[in-house]
Structures are given as C-alpha cells and as structure tokens.
Length: 172
Image (cartoon, rainbow, N blue to C red; front, side):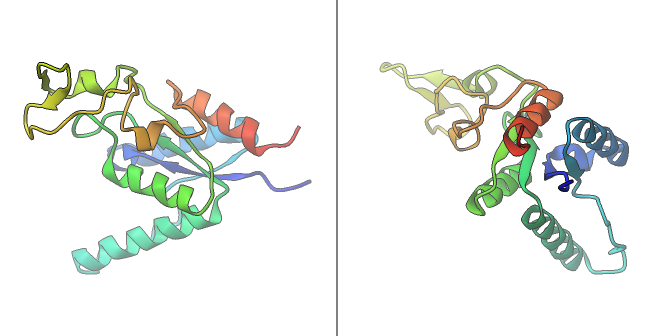
C-alpha cells in the first residue's frame, strides 16, 4: 500500500487562537479523503529564545521545507486583514506552483474581488481603488487572478477543496 499523498495546509488559521485545533480538524478531513494533512505548526520547535528576526527566519524555513516535502498545497484564500488573501498564503501558493506542485484553494467569501475593494469607476467603466488610485482588476474572480485563474478553481468550502485535491492526487 502506498503512502497517502501529503498536502500542506496553508492559510491564516495559523494566527487563530485555536490554531492547533483548527489544523487538527483539517487533518481529520484530509485523512477521511485519503490525504495526509501537514500544518505549518507541525513539528513546531521552541524558538522563543531566539531574537525575533531569527524566529521569523526559522519559521519561514520550516514552512518552505514542509511545502517541499508535500505533494500539493491546499490554501485558504478567504479575505484576511483586508479584501484579499493572506500575503504569506499567497507566497506559499506561488512557491508550490514554482516547484510544480498543484495548488487547491477555498474562499468562504464568494463575492468577486472587485466588490470587496472600495473603488470608483471612471467614464470608461474602469474601477479604481479609492485608497491608492490604481485599477482594480475585474475578472469576476474571488481574488487576484494569479491566485484564482489556475487549473483548479477555488472552492467555497474546505472539504470541497480537500475532495478536489484527493480526486487529483489519488489514483482510482
């Protein structure tokens, strides 16, 4: 029997006060679907005695190593601290794709990205961000096209993204 495909669980859940419980729940859903979930907090070392910059570098490297060891990434791209996905999650998604690993995602806010960004339209109908004055992309996607226009469309629920990943990673 071959090992279960490993999936890195990316997303802002790492910042939640109950992060360990949330990741345990995600791992259970992965296991029910024949996958092994790997959380950013797995194997958490005690870096508390390190200076903050060294802590950050150690955490980053540990997550990079986990992504390398996994077969795919499942990422939460729900809005976090603003209208779009968490910046760290976006980086992890791009890194995984650069390694040739498939990326699956879910976004609980299904409104198009444009609806979440304060904007005004010019005479030609182009939307401009009211804060920065730059064009806001309008492709009807839930986030930036680089995160959402790939081969696997974002799902609306975690379990849907896990099932999507399982159907792609596990041979019948």
